[in-house]
Image (tube, rainbow, N blue to C red; front, side):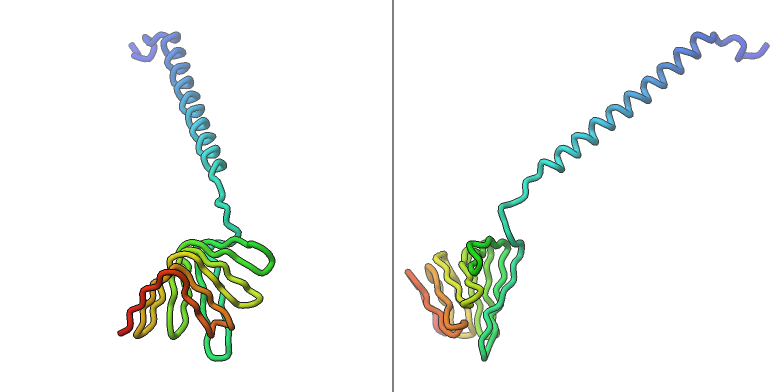
Length: 149
């Protein structure tokens, strides 16, 4: 006699229901996990930064000073607060600091945070600086430590 004729129909029906139930449970669990991922993505906060990785330049007749930073915020129409790893670079020197207020119209920059000036034969560590006259003049403030080679 055939083996399939001996299987109870109720047994096959219940096995089918159990498989369908497990299938629906898996689908519901996946939907819930996708919703949690969407909620986590939408809850990410945007930082309070107007400009990410800003780049500016101070131009004069003889040289350009390039300014880069990680973050920038507009203080007013002319001034920008540059923060985190602010670097001034020209062919002659570089200055590194953490916070600078850069005036785009006057092409000036000032800082009251710890600053490091490096050139070929000179290193200066100071408590701040002021760049004016289109980058031709730099004044260092506070306690300054100068190394001449």
